Length: 397
Image 1: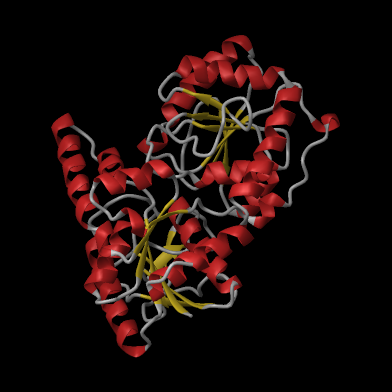
Image 2: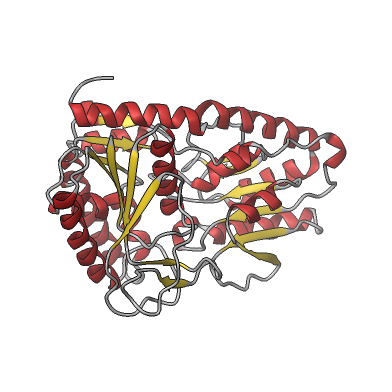
């Protein structure tokens, strides 16, 4: 099949949405399909992670594209205006220009080589695919806009409420325009059904793990540390709820003064009491996650599926996460799950893992088993292919 994967975003980037998009393209290419990725004319600099760079070769100055998945082609929208300093998530004024340029690219691609199926990642990509006139659109629902959008609104509560209402309208109108919707977990699927998205058009498929992390050896008891560091991976936007993590670590240090906090991020930051490691991609994650560490995921939002969670499971690490994002997890079996927003319980879970090497080992082994069962890239590719063929042919697979 000839498949077009659309991302209304700067690309490439280490942000979760772009990592998910790339994994989708790689999975389809591994099944022998012809895959083209259509994205903005700019992305993350391959030399300076987190910084934006012009990657549209019609623009000057531009730098060569970083490598993308094997057996895929890359189509970039024209770049209008100057790129921002950094690659960030969320809405901004520049997106109006970028989305218009991407829509024009999609119109050209539809006329030149109509794809058999279109994979649209997130709300904007779906809207642009519909506006460009594509058929057989598979919508990858990364989250509920009604839950996500208020996180990017600062100021009065009434503004956040207005953002939530706008998100609800989009969630009620847009997903139903797709031939198939892929949700990463059951709760988001149920939310979309309540917003009148046809139940029969929704498939549930969690994101795949990176093979490099699945290949990391599980740690033997001899490599366990007396006080392993707590590791946070990802951007520092409000929805990540990192303030709760900082408060929890402060509490934990009252009992374990030597407890270290390591933050791996593309965002520039100075966090008192934390070691900041610039995120330079999978090599950075694999290096840090190959040691005895505890992965902390304090996120409060319920609708997304954190790629950092998939990474931690794949690496076989003990995890402390909130019940808002513990998809596919069971407390005390493959992670420690605490109530969202409860810094005291989060702190107690961290101390418990610091003190018990055998618990870290058991949870890590079970985390790896969970990744192999639910996030294996080969299984993901097979299931994704089946859903896309179903959307393209209108038949069950």
